[in-house]
Figure 1 (cartoon, rainbow, N blue to C red):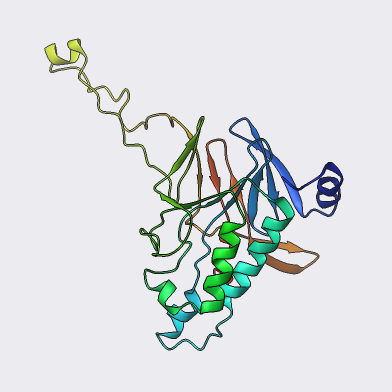
Figure 2 (figure 1 turned 60 degrees about the vertical axis):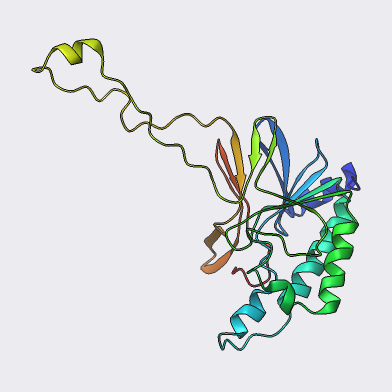
Length: 233
């Protein structure tokens, strides 16, 4: 952990960082698109979508080759600011399974340097990158569980409860069927921290319209913004 109380106070005053409570822990929401857990010294980032630009260019989109290096340099600076013990990348870190074959040697080297600068780096699988590219450091995983919090790319949906008929319902054919318990979902066993949805917000202030990426935090769900350079704003 590299941050100090003085640094944090300045960032909060500048509205560059917001502090929220989720799953009984305090989280720092950095306006640059990452979340930090001081109690664990963990930094969470989601949806890097590395090499999205080169993927879209292969389909005729006239995009420059700047997205991966821009994404990585922003992430590198954030990691220097926090110096976390662990980084969790919450899926869709690579835009497709051929991303590494299109990435320049310089960008691959930068990526590896960033990963190796952190004691622990976890790659949570996403729908774009179910398999970690070969030759990349870090630990691939489906999800990470800590206490009552699970970190995954997409939310786990609970199915409706099945219900056995009550004894009196079996005996009587004239009684109206009971709907007790039907259509209700099982209570969530864990709080979920996810990516995938690329949340954004639009606001009008003094007749000017602003839009940008955002965090979404409810009682049981914490949705990360997409970090990648070409993931929309």
